Every structure is written in C-alpha cells, then in structure tokens.
Image 1 (cartoon, helix red, strand yellow):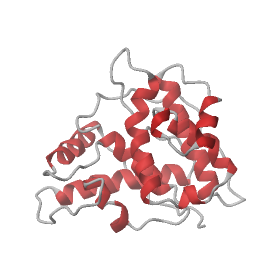
Image 2 (cartoon, rainbow, N blue to C red):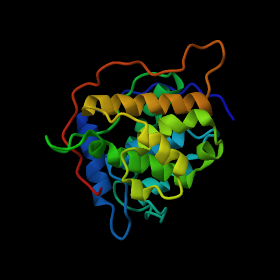
Image 3 (cartoon, rainbow, N blue to C red):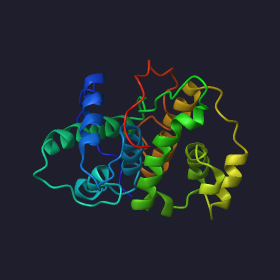
Image 4 (cartoon, one colour):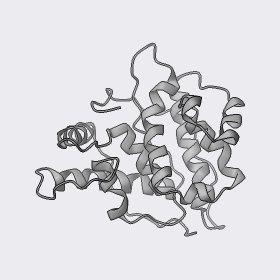
Length: 225
C-alpha cells in the first residue's frame, strides 16, 4: 500500500471543457465504445482509489474503449482528449489526496428521475474500474463495505450477483432524498474508501469529506449510457 502523493494542483475543467470532452468522446469511431463523461468520472475515482497507483498506460485505454481496444494514435483529437482526461485525473487526485470536496460529474436526468438513477452512470464507471483493477476490492476490508454499498445501491439488485454481503448492506441504507444528498453520498464514500486504500499520514487531518452543498450542476451529458 502506498500513501497518497501530493499531485500538482490544476485548474478545474470549465463547462466549455466538459462539453468539449464529451464531443471528443462521441467522435471516437465505432466499433470502439468510449465512456461518457459521467462514467469517466466514476472510473477515474475508482482508478485513483487503488492501493497501488495504476500506470496511465493501463487505465487510459479503457477511456477510449471500455474493453481496452486500441484507438488509432493518428486519430485527430487524441492529444486534446488525453489532455482533458489527464486534467480531470489530476483534479480528482488532488481532491482525494487532500480529502477535499470535489464535484462529481453527476447530472440530473429529468424532474421525475430517482436520485440513484442519476448517479448510476457514475457508479457504472466506478464499477468498471473495480473490475479492471481489483486491488481495492482484494483488500477485503470491513471498512469498505458501507461506502461501496452506498455507491452500488444505484444498481439493480439483479446486477449484483454473488455479492451477498454487499446486497445485505444495501438493504440497510436509507435512499437519498434528493440528488444533492446522493452527490454528497458519492463524495463521502470516495473519501471513506481512500481512508482504507490511500490512508493519510498520521500527522495529517482527514477521515471524512467536507460536507457542503454541491454547486449548480450543468446540463446532462450527451453520449452512451
């Protein structure tokens, strides 16, 4: 297990950057199946929560295609796309290492949508990272069960086969009352998992994410869900 590094702070992606990132992901040619920006955000958090740092070459190819099929390095827009993804990666790395609030890329689908329905794409990206890089799950720490249950509660129970302990924990949870509460649950769960897999030095203060209302959310992302 390695302690969290101190990433170099980077300016957060603006709304224009966010839109550009989704446009570039949408332009990736078939048959590749890239992540959309909400899945990407959950995926990056899952990568960053591994007890041992995952090399960029190992994780970034799954951004371009969930199965890791290669994207032609001559594809126009590749350099720009990689730059935007790496900026978000560093932004999240700084937040997680410092146990600071971050704004998950979770978007309101419509007025009638259940809060967990809105967090599902984010959770799907996180789950993909857990399957591809199982270091956190292999730790099998009891302290990971509740925060994992909070994140996986967005899934249909039928999609969580052979996860009896997780399903039992999900049954004990009170569903979020609105999307702001669901977003706060996501951030808190990420930080609690980081306390297990990427613990802070004993001299540092940490152990929980700051509780504050998230800023105004942008429009729903375009792309594949």
